[in-house]
Image (cartoon, rainbow, N blue to C red; front, top):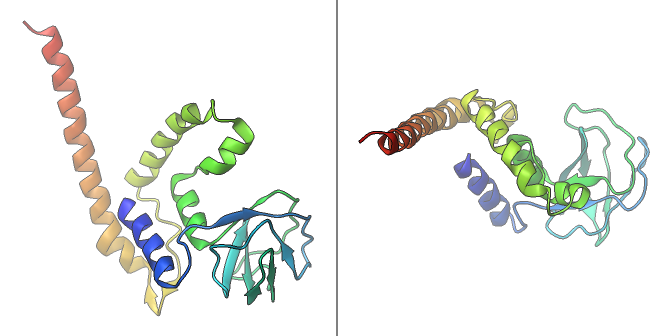
Amino acid sequence: MTLFIIGTILSFSVEGEFGIAATSLTTTLDNNDLVIEVDDTTGFLTLDFIVIGEENICYTGKTATTFTGITRGCQDTGAEAHAAGVSVYNEGSNIVNSLIGFNIAEAMSTAGVIRVPFMLATTVPRTFAKIISWDYSYLEGSLWTVPLVYVKFILFYPLSGAFMISFIIMMVNIFMGIARLFTP
């Protein structure tokens, strides 16, 4: 998982932008709007797609605070209406948030700094569950004509297996350490 996140960040850095970028809508977005107004477009590629809720939106240009040349509901998603203040992600942010099932910035803005550590405690088991269940459903389609299913089989399944073995070894060591406390 860590390798995938680092690779995503590096790939976007090579393209001249940040790997993980997020902003929020400044106005309500109807399902037929063709200009998207946001707080800031820094870190987003000039030509790419953004993710708002369950909708992917392709764009062909940007200014400091807008995305232009919009194609709503691209990549087999449906156009939806979105409220002002909703988070807008680039591909890297969306993949990371989907993988771990947790958006710390959004959680801090709605839950506050005090509750975030407790929310993280519930996020770790969910992330672990995705890793051990090999939930790589976000790897669909292809990248430069290479089916991403190969990435699953060649890279992520072996990493998941290694992660499981490491986790089992760690748990055995923890339980053995606890057992030593109770033995003379």
